Structure formats: structure tokens, C-alpha cells
Image 1 (cartoon, helix red, strand yellow):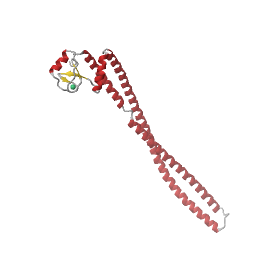
Image 2: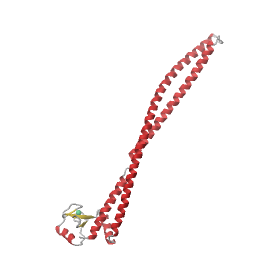
Image 3: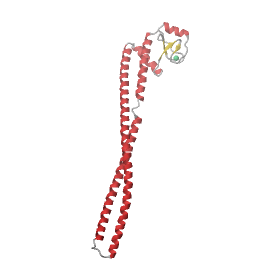
Image 4: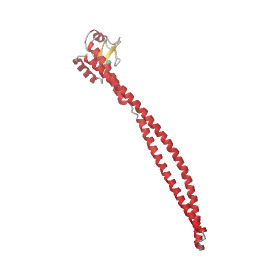
Length: 237
Ligand SMILES: [Zn+2]
């Protein structure tokens, strides 16, 4: 049983936890889907706003045009019935103008009614888009808040783990720390493996009995013949 290896194994457990936590932190979603949904809702709202404004402007233009036509019609009628114009040709032409203005008014009335309907529809869509935008904003904010809280929690845990690692490492001799560093590089972070019931815990290979006994009784550093990891004895009970 090698006490240095046992201490290194405890250190490795903390290192594994640190690595897992760092990975989780990297993979943490800051709310990309919710952010995209918010942007889409903003685009939709702007689009609906712009068509509503355009329809409103068209409606005002048509109403102004109607006023002009009506005024012109009234003025012409006034002149026609005033008795001041006697020329039949002129009277006839005035009557024609009044008729034309009447037709123009009818078609404007129709146009205005259609525009009013369209405007109402746009207003409704505008309200819906506004509500959707507000909702998307709230959803994104909530997601961001959750992300920040989780991130903070992970970062605090990492700080604590780093502190714990520091404490463990300070009790281990430098030469063993160096060896640990080399072994870790060779085995992608997991350099030490416990011997559990005669097996290498990392690769599940059954180890020769003589090897198991040797590392249980002496300080010898032995490696698993299959995965090459350093075997640590005396931690399975
Ligand atoms: Zn192994």
C-alpha cells in the first residue's frame, strides 16, 4: 500500500470533479433559443407597426381626398343652383362635373371602408405582436437569470474545489506531484485506478494475484497491464 498514491488518488477525484464542472460551465446555455425568439418577436412587431402606420396614412389621405371632393361638389352645386350661370353648355358641363364628383365620392367611401377594416386588422395584429414581444422579453429575462444563477453556483463550487485541491496538494511531496502530472497527461486526466476485488477499476481487467498482493503489501508502483494506469491499493474498503 503506497500512501502517496492514495493521497494522489484523492487529488485525482477532486481534479475529475473540477474538470466535470468546467465542462458543465462551458456547455451552459445562456438562452440562445430564447434570445432568437425575442429577436424574431421584435422583427415581427416592427413589421406589423410599419404596415399599420402605412394603412393609417393611406386612410388619412383618402379621408382628406374625400373632403376635397365633397367641398368641390358642394361648391359646384351651389354655383349651379345660384342662378348666376345661364349658359346651357356651361350648366351642362357643371352637371357632368357634379356627377363625376359623386362617383368619385362613392369610390372613395368604399376605399375608406376597406382601409378602415384593414386598419382594424392591423391594429389587432399590432396588439398581438406587442404582447408576444413582451412575453418573449420576459421569457428571455427569466432564462438569462437562471443562467446567471447557475453560472454563479458553478463558479462558487469551482472556487471551493480549487481551494480543496490546494489543501490536498500541499500535503503531497513535489516529486509525487510531478509524477502525477506526467501520468495525467498520459491518460487524459485519469492516471490512477483503484484495485477493486482484484480488478483494475478503470478498465475492469482482472489483475494477476501476485501483482495485487505485491501492491497491497509494499510501496511498489505498479501499472495495469491493460490500460497502463497506476494501480492504487487499499481504497476499496
Ligand atoms: Zn486498467
